[in-house]
Image (cartoon, rainbow, N blue to C red):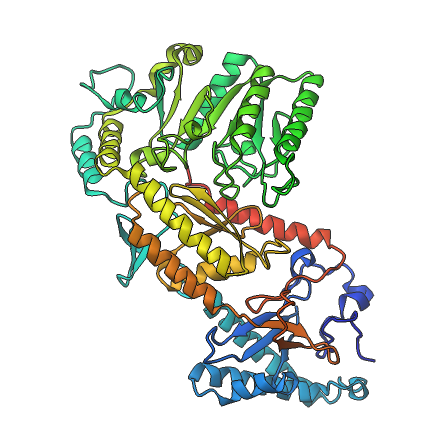
Length: 615
């Protein structure tokens, strides 16, 4: 008898010797949960990859696929609605003819299987027919993977061979607008920075075991001038990770505490000593790390429609800190970005950060501001983002943007707090190379008025992005300031359901348009924009125009299931917005924890690979 799926779900019959439907699994397959094509049912139940021939009206035909471990089931021409079938067969392009051929092969495969109930009992039929079906199946699998790779991984990975200002170039000399590399603060390979480094290294002297006179170094003084007067000590390191490690050491020595408070899904370095603080890349549970909820008023537990949302976040955190104290532990510090960029460009209300600092200090801890991503004028209104939040951290961390990507970082604090290091403080002095590069970055920032430029360009970009938000259902939220922005991609504004699939497709399509974006956040559905500070209004306009083009190419018709056959068809009903971009939205079904953990592990490995050089 044919397998029967749940009402409203696509019913398909197995190819010979393929696995049964999971609800009718043979005992020998009960433990087989990791085979090819199985993905987390929490997010991808009955997920179908739909080969999109073109997003424009020129070619509206689509080929639907459902990948199984041992078989690919094509919804081929005789199972498509009449308009779709006509459009596919009427196209003259080579690509469309290839898809038509694949559809015809699939049709032949379906004929061999004889999809009606009567022939299902004899679908194992003759050996010759089974053999022919297996050959077609293998060809369909190969075609599908090649098409999917062409669709989602075209020109990937890029082979970048050089960069200049806000542009990057591949081995074919194609130019890409860089919208994600905040480390190249004043622009890639800025000639002033390059010349300063070259000159400094030509006379650099490396010593070990004794001190030498390095001359009149000005950078420490100039950097301190950008801070309020109470920050009078600067300790230099080689990376943001090392700066976080040093800050935690100082906090523990100063407070005699051991425990650290961090925000969920944050990133604060990849050294072993601070890796547990980076919830973005580490799921390790350690006793001395306490994770507080992310104050996300768009997708968090408490949202903007609740007037008491901020107070509720603070109440939960207060109870958590009290529990730590009741357990006999002492908090050493609270580490957080003033603007939470890595978790998805979340700008917490200033009252939240102010109250967090107050609670941590009442527990005897220090407050540490991570300015790796948002410092040096990037937010436009202030040179440091903690000033925009009207807070006064005890320790400030700055990363490689200080040197435009050169390995240098800094810990800025008061003389009183830094004194706990004793003679070790001499280990964190500024070198001649750091002095030359750091001064060059400050010179460029001041002379080109990059902070003011970030404010004006950011205001223009925000207006343009908000216009796109009004125009497209896929954009649920736009947030940020200066040259730090996040675009929340959702299936629909009403549901707010995050769509990693659409976000990734937009990133790939923008790459084809020679614009580099990244999708981040817990669900990886947030388009992140943190470009070099030389990013101009013309660049912002080009970015939004191309983003508008890519969004406009996404299908505006809806894909629904035929009430009779249970198969996908194209509908013009405006109320149904369950599927986008040719990918089925997950159906409601019981969750599979094993498969969910597999997907989470894949996301974790991706994050660990991508964030290792972020600081």
